[in-house]
Length: 446
Image (cartoon, rainbow, N blue to C red; front, top):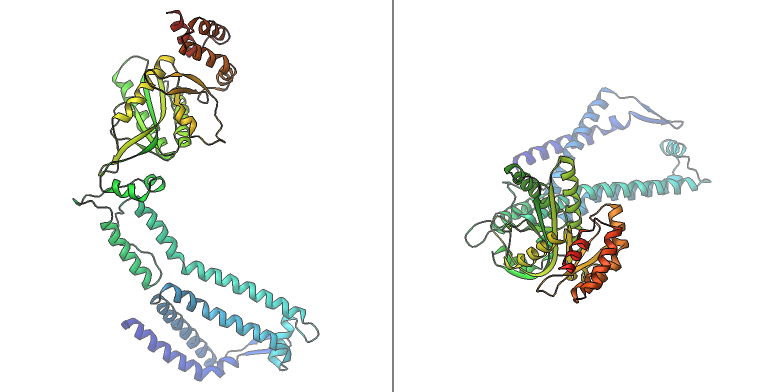
């Protein structure tokens, strides 16, 4: 027992004994007459009241010190025990009050409007006491379990990487102090590789990757699984300048990469061609692609930037690892297909193109306007253009022409260039700004 606790215990004993001895002076100061309370303290009554307050204060300090030495299950019991005893005593007193016949009891019955003939009010007071007791229990449980909430938040941060703190203060009793110390030890040890360097695993890894692959990534190994890749490529069609290159770099850093993280993706650190996001759900990859196209269009319009943006989305078996800085490293082979789709996009001037594998893995409830745009050369990949990235008028016009356009593309792929030529000529008469139809028309003439 600490010295401070011993001192408080001695002070409590002295004040409590004195309060008990002098208590008649305190009780005689309170009188009930005709349902009215009158208070008249004598000098000894004031002394006794002061001793009572001191004894109560020392008792509360000792009580809280006692609770801090207990485990959580015992804290829950002993923290609610006084209120439970008080609640039980109050109910018993309320039920037995009608049988008493003295000045104090009669004054209380008059105040509470309780009589032998009127038992209904007794029930109402019992219900009120029960509600008040439940409210007190809620407050006690909220205070006692607050360290658990802090521990939950701390564990969430530990799941994202090392925390730069020398001590974790959870509050609560001795048990939570031990837990905080253990978490501090985990913080210093769990995220280290064999060479002692910390490895930061992004939060999305624990959300979508199983524990076995997460352990491999944490140890620096490469894993393989099917993921959804979205490659964003921005070009400057204005005058080539150092400022233009700098503006594009800022777009990658300030718009593209934050959006990748927002849509549960990881940005590949070793992609030198545009900005590559790795996603674990097809809808996340497509949602990001739509969002980045719109954001780049708004940014370019606001600051007068002359840029073209192209986004390619595909599902691939991806080989990737996490470096010591917590950055995603992806195999270069996975980028090749996406670069070919970007090359195709630049030819047909389509902002967002995705493969049929993306379409196959979208939820049935996913709303999307798109059209078949062709097949990637030398690969068995059907490509589709998303119409969601365009303005309302252009989107409605392209969607209206979807069926004849797709017939023209299929005729072109089958070698029926004359039939395809007639379709694209008719389409361009109605919509001269359809660059994809214009490209296919030129190829039909060659």
